[in-house]
Amino acid sequence: MKKKIVKKKKVIHKKMVASRAIKVTSKKPVKPIGVVTHYFSKIKVAIIKCKQPVRVGAEISIRGATTDFKHKIISMQYDHQPVAVAKKGQEVGVKVGKRVREGDEVFLA
Image 1 (cartoon, rainbow, N blue to C red):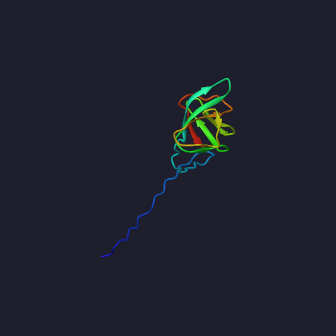
Image 2 (image 1 turned 60 degrees about the vertical axis):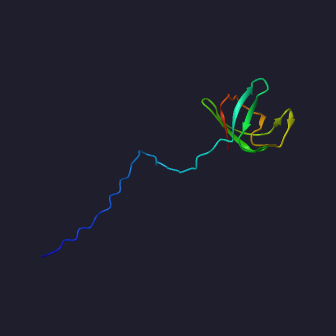
Image 3 (image 1 turned 90 degrees about the vertical axis):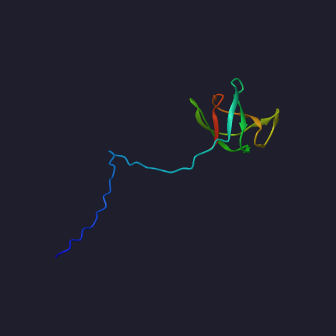
C-alpha cells in the first residue's frame, strides 16, 4: 500500500486596491487633556478646563463637530494673571487663532 502525503497549502488572500496601497497603523487611543467650556469671540479666547497639566509653548489640537485645527499656546491666564503651567482641574483662558465651541475637546498634538 502506498501512502499519499498531502501537504496543506497556505492560502494568502491579498486585497488589491487600484493604484494605492492600504496602510494600517495601530495607534494608541488619544485621551483629551481638556474641554472648552466657553469662548469669547471678540477677543478670541477659549476657556479650557484642564484634565492634565499643560504648559505655555505646547502645541494643542482642538477637535469638535465643526472644529479641527492645531494651535501653539502663546498666552495662558488663570484668574486674570498669566501662568506658565495650568494644573489639573484648573480653568484657564487660552488665546486661540480660530473659533472654537463649547464641548470641543483639546488634545496634545
